[in-house]
Length: 132
Image 1 (cartoon, helix red, strand yellow):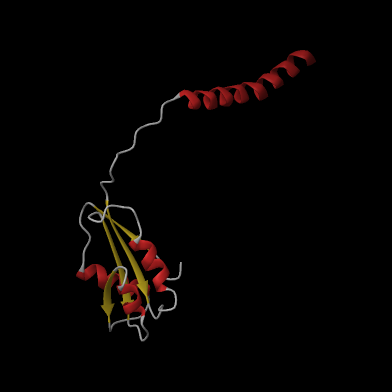
Image 2 (tube, one colour):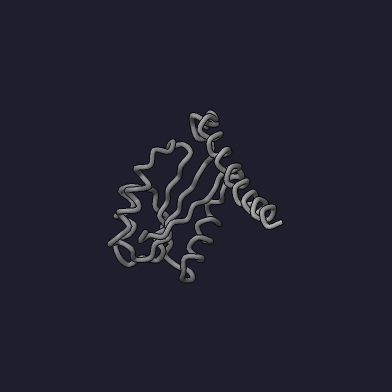
């Protein structure tokens, strides 16, 4: 009886391992599923920034350097009630929307921008922090 229990225990351990190994090997021979040659999704990346002049150029330059098609990617820095040169530094790389009044905080700045520039039905929104 003990021998039967040991065999059963071994089977319960080995069978899932063999199954996983076979699935892994099958993945080596499966051709890769093709991806579209060109992106089709419209993306808008926004960066709310309040007095981020010291760090905004890095993320603005990174957004401008993306290899995503220009007609599908819109990048905007929201200069939110800035008292420094955030808008000027970002403007050398991406679009800038300047907000000079209203409540504080990133949520208020994003809401202000999206009220003035609503998303299209086929567009996704990416929100990045200025000091990423």
